[in-house]
Amino acid sequence: MMLRELELTNFRSYETARFALHPDVTLVVGPNASGKTNLLEGLYVLASTRSFRAKDRDLVRHGEDYFRIVGRTEDTEYALGYGDGEKKITHDGVKRTLVGHVGQIQVTLFEPTDLELVAGAPEGRRRYLDFLLSQTDRAYLRTLQQYRRVLKQRNALLDGFDVGRIRDQIFGWDVKLAELAVEIYGARGRLLAVLAEATPLLYRDIAGESVEVAFEYLPSVTGVYEEQFLETLARNLTRDLAAGFTTIGPHREDFKIHFKNNDITRVASRGETRTLVLAMKLAELGYAEERTGIRPLLLLDDVFSELDRQRRGYLLNRLEGYQTLVTTTDADAITKEFRTAHQLIATEAAAHA
Image (cartoon, rainbow, N blue to C red; front, side, top):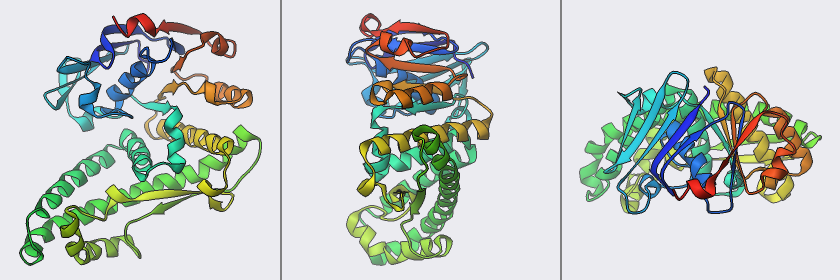
């Protein structure tokens, strides 16, 4: 997938802007708060239909009531519009569903808050798994959509009922939620197994040393997941009624990273954490390409300023052959290290056009 052009209308700081994208490297250059990350975010939203940092309504330019993003390849125009709380997706003007769109444009994002994969809230780690699985497996995306719908229905029942009146009504939703939860649990576990195999090797290549790295999924039930989930839902009904929401399930699960046979948050330095996250993102890149046969578009948001020379060099070598967009405040510092063809986009004027 090679994108030739990106067009933004009423998106973030952009009233209207059109950018030609280089088949190799496009450097997005400008001072802070000039729209560099907004440009990358537009590509990410076009690919995944969601932002990595904000809700849909917050992406609309101030004073406007909609946004529209268009990406063009040699033979296809992909468009995503948002207004009145709804999204509309088209390919060459033909309406498409979310499942029919996600995965058509593969993206892998490297950005400073990726460090939160290690020490941040569980929501970020769940989003990491769900994003990668949704981009590469339409069946998973359908399951995730269904799970969210069933969860919403179950949570609605929890509002205003007592335990005596709700049991018969909620059982059917419990059964369906359990079936979907088992599928999500299995897919996430299989993905973590792939990452557990690839990440230590990539870490060794980047850092020049071998370390023990393992991933542990943290389910919300104990014992055999398939057997315990439905039983635990029933047992927790009183607690769920008191809370007003469903307190177990994939929407509340997490995973832990073990580094040198310890919890990484206790033993890893900032440099080791950064290297591990970089290895995880490269493992994500390889997984996506292997599963789909599509080389992801790489979005590097102010990454090089966070890496030392050795790690910058490794990343540049690793990413040759991928269409890449890089944001920076200092183009001269980065162009010295790029050996591939590239072009520059200056955002200061474009962001406020």
